Length: 305
Ligand code: ATP
Ligand code: RIB
Image 1 (cartoon, rainbow, N blue to C red):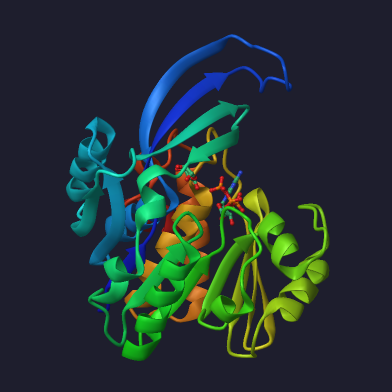
Image 2: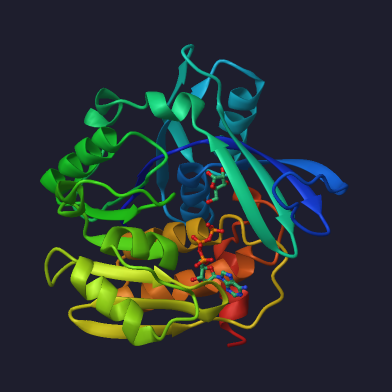
């Protein structure tokens, strides 16, 4: 079995729950404030680890209480944190999240995540059969160096280009599997997409975006599930009907589960189905990293579908 190695962000999520989201300039009374471990890198690493993959996270935290709590939490989830370093230059990444009607708005302040350097990833322990995973909450140059190293070792690379920003085409060329939501696909493909668009519209955009025919593009579509373009074949992965309470980290669960399954040697279709099921469990719980399901939980639901 291969390993999952994630280079990515580590945040403390400060979550306010409310009946509805405030409009700009408006104040609404909330229900409670909650602190959850989060950050796209950390969430994806926790998902992969809880689903049974030997997992390492490469990241940066500040010299502060949030950083110490997050390191302890990650280690308790079985994530190898030996490449998580402290930096005195900034505070631990923090996300201010409002959750209302199962939907969220997020303001993320990168802090220490912006200090993850090319050097930090240069000795990442990667080998053929491993899966290297990253997202856009760390510097682009660091991601490029990480994937260049991964490619040199024969590891598979997965990029989740979130939050949505346009980036250099050279980085896209280092990606084996791109997992993104419809907003991110729209930004990268230079077209406006809505979650209500037809499957064919997403597949066309994915076809235009991919750099070659071996690159796999997977578009996550919330409750609709996901679509993928693999070997020129469109794959439809229907969503599972569940009652969502908090979708924060759903995309991260999908990516972490996909990586874990591929590291185990699964075929892409099987890995996508598994990720879709894992993410449907994640949305039924509050919080990002703590809502990631275990392999036993996914296995139990698998027996019923
Ligand atoms: P986030 O940024 O909140 O993590 P995202 O936009 O990156 O989310 P989504 O496309 O919303 O990601 O969701 C990722 C996956 O989670 C979906 O492909 C699906 O498998 C699952 N999912 C999300 N919302 C639901 C839901 N309401 N019901 C069932 N599954 C869901
Ligand atoms: O994808 C969800 C994550 O995005 C949250 O945990 C938050 O930290 C932001 O980075």
